[in-house]
Amino acid sequence: MATRKMRAFKRWMKSQGIDCSDALDLVLTNYASSPSPSPSSSFSVSVRALCDLQEGDIVARIPKGSCLTIKTSRARPVIEAAGLDGFLGLAVAVMYERSLGPLSNWFVYLQLMPFSEPIPLLWSDHEIDSLLVGTELHKMVKEDKDLIYEDWKECIQPLLVSAPLELNPQFFGIEQYFAARSLIASRSFQIDDYYGSGMVPLADLFNHKTGAEDVHFTSLVSEVESDQDADINPRNDECESHMNDTLLSENSYERNGSSGGSEFDCSSTSGDDLTVLEMIMVKGVKTGNEVFNTYGSLGNAALLHRYGFTEADNPFDILNIDLELVDQWSSSLFSRRYHRRRLLLWRRLDYCGCVSQNVEYFEVSFEGEPQVELLVLLYIMLLPEESHNELDLLVSSMGNICRPANQSCSEKFFVAFGKKSELNKDLLLTESVRAALLSLADIRESLYGSSSLDADIEALNNCDSLKEPNFYYSLLLRISERRILDKFRSYATCGADFPRTSKKAMTRSKMSRT
Image (cartoon, rainbow, N blue to C red; front, side):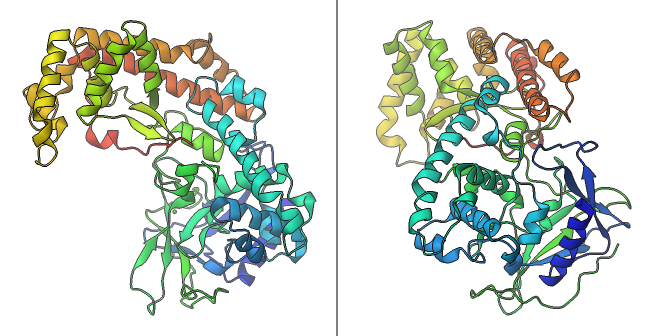
């Protein structure tokens, strides 16, 4: 049956003007032998090279009109009349095209897709609370589920009684909506300003491998329109994308090819009629090897959240320490008045942590090195009263001339400590600051419960990733975060002797919260 679906999909691609190179082999894999199992389907698809592929080879051309978007769906009148857009509107388009069955232009394509993807959004409440406790995702996924349900109740349910088209309730229930959102979260691409996000046939069959991009996804614009190619965000992976801003809720995530030289006729009424999407090799791939896309430089929390899997030894992993945990540490030592004064001085020096959805936090890199903003905050918190008063007076006396001048408040802080251009972290790593970092590590570690890191590693070694994928991937996430905590402790212990992270290694993509 799976083979028949693939043959039908290849015929469908040709009918839609999708040009897939003969050098690509679309391989069906049973989940019994697949490294990325999913309970929602019995097989997966990977893309392999039938011959040596070279950098610059065009391996696919996909007309934008063949993509499933709000603009191309037959549900467009309903979606636009209801004022829906973004992922919410795209979810309606997916559900509606599914409801049409063989009458849908994307019926064959949707038949190849699983009903849903195994992302944490679709896990049971028990799984979320037991498998994600302590991780970056625990609260986030619970909030996602609540907001997605609100989306359905406020925006989807009313369509069943008010939409000009007769919608089949069987295809627009809460389960169908969550399933559609999971497909969109893990498979959609940001196409362009006109089409927005959409499901891109063929492009979404390329699997991800961190730091191993073989093929890049671009938008080829006709010469009439532009001489430039536009990069396409692979599966909405950039931290500035809509996926990161609201990740899964609307209320609050790239041989010689046989690409022909002909233009494709896109069924659109926009100025983008003559545009196509191209997939271009960015490095060579040998015969028989899998051709990978990359969804971005994402840590395991982001990978599990959006795509339902994690990777061992992911160099883009990070750990967050909420400001709330710093408050908890401070309240155990100082009065609230003391804490507020020190925090206010820190903010007057133009410091803040990362902020997303009203949650302020500090990042710890894969190597265990915290943001300098956290070190500065702890340093100020632990300053002797006399030193604090002197710094506070300095900031106050320079306040009137600070803002109009080129010198920022942060620069005044550097001046106060003998550095005008860059704050030396080693100066901040006093004995008391290092002790504070160790205390924060213990507080953060306690969020994982009574199970130790060694116990998690043992559980991972005994876990069958094919039979228990949710347990396996969540364990990888917990272990990766806790190993960063161990490096964080080493950083606090070693101080100036801690091996510094290179600037290149520190480059990573943050996962914004929902």
